[in-house]
Picture (tube, rainbow, N blue to C red):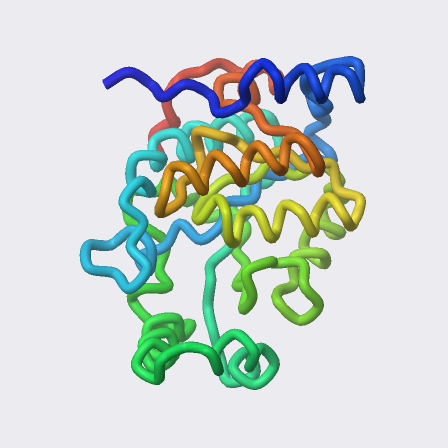
Length: 235
């Protein structure tokens, strides 16, 4: 099956070039201040019969693994973020949970508990023991109290975030927008993200590219990192 074409059309690129003078704002990377942040590639979205199953998510696993391998070889950290919930999340984000049917709330309470099977990262991901891991209790990892992401990034002096995962238009977009608004150089990898609906995936990426940060393919990112495009190295 041929790779899908980029959702960035000539008119989108022309608008960015007219504003910035170039089609991509993040083409130079420093291993000392770059990180790959992978959002919510966990069983809750990838396992058969999962409550929030994303049909396109498994297809991006090889690309996510290739990105992670390239970033490690570049000398930068890989961070795996998981969506979880707890009692404080239910209290502090009641506007979100109060609108749901009770059975939906109970499903999330059970399946997004930190020790639940659905919180585990998908088994085909190339997660290494030296990779970093964070848990978040909101769509955006950067909302105060949602996670310790800013502490982790600060420890590694990160100011450039390459981001991928699921869902493009929900947790990836929410986290990426907030990262840019907090003054991180933020890039979303188009073919390493997935959403429940292709049109929502594309609309999210186009909006982010036009207004918030950069959008590139995995091949473009890896080329700009200056590492080869081989598949993930064996553990």
